[in-house]
Length: 312
Image (cartoon, rainbow, N blue to C red; front, side, top):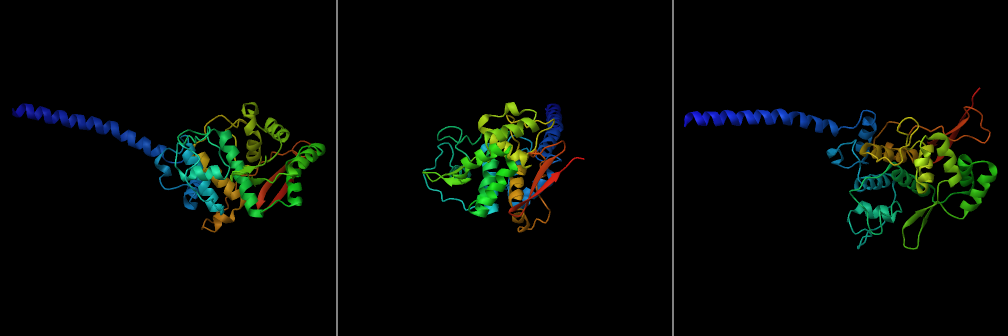
């Protein structure tokens, strides 16, 4: 009947209206989630312009946890931008749960061993301490690629900047001298010497983070390294949140920081005219420490400028 047809028509229109009302806010929320946080927006824009983040990176929320697949894609993109010569890939790949090229590159460069023998875990998240260890290795890789080898004077200066008291520094210097910062293993993958000894890392983290006890032993030297250089920052209240998962925007900015720290000219050559360097970290306390005495490091090409802030 005509009346029934009209009722059906009205009912259909009502249902469509209800669906529309429900759908509109959902779309709005999704669009908002895929926009970087305000604090990250400028650097994320630079990451996109530089090619650190690939097309489609914004198809997932920036403040969501990054997967291992996407994290190591960022790291390999950063290696390419720096000019690291990536190894040739040959099958079979090391990992059985992914054929992703970035995962294989990361393995060959010694950036990851996976989550278990032969397992990469592409869809798993990373903690902040895991990401920090990888970032520390990339920093060493970039420095090694820039210099080829560590000169004795450079290595002595590096150890002085980050050392403890003289006797301890001498002990670590003698131990470290026989091991280059980056070296090739018997199976052809790269490996890395610790950026500092465990005593140095413990001292730094205990003094300048509120949750140093939560950091895994295997992650302490790497996390202390990148924290002391300003490549990562805390999450507030002096906390490093080592067991917290790293977000997509945090991972992208870490990639930008390590690239800019080692050689900002890599960004300038691709048309980015802003001075993009991580904030220097006033963390290292000198041997003659008195209150407010701190040593700041930040890059000047391949050298380092050192500044001491002395309290009155």
